Amino acid sequence: MTADDSFGRLDDDDFPAYTMGRAADMLGTTQSFLRAIGEHRLITPLRSPGGHRRYSRYQLRIAARARELVDQGTPVEAACRIVILEDQLQEAQRINAEHRRTSGSANPPAAA
Image (cartoon, rainbow, N blue to C red):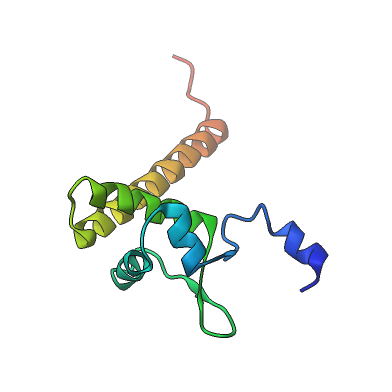
């Protein structure tokens, strides 16, 4: 990958740009918290060629939401499940809205 390729990925939410240490610092949490939410399959970091965990901005947003719930007293396992369900709900709402847009334009309502 060239430097030009790397710069093009800076806006990519799914590009694994952050090391575990940097991700933990950015979230104000510990590396063990990131490992824990990984064990509960909330996020699965990509691995560098050397085997180090790398996180994307999208994954950091998900981890930040889990941390917010844990800070409010929710157990890690429950926080991970809540975040997964929230993400699934948001995706379902997006799909429903898209379906409404496409079905509405394809079949306009009949005049009464």
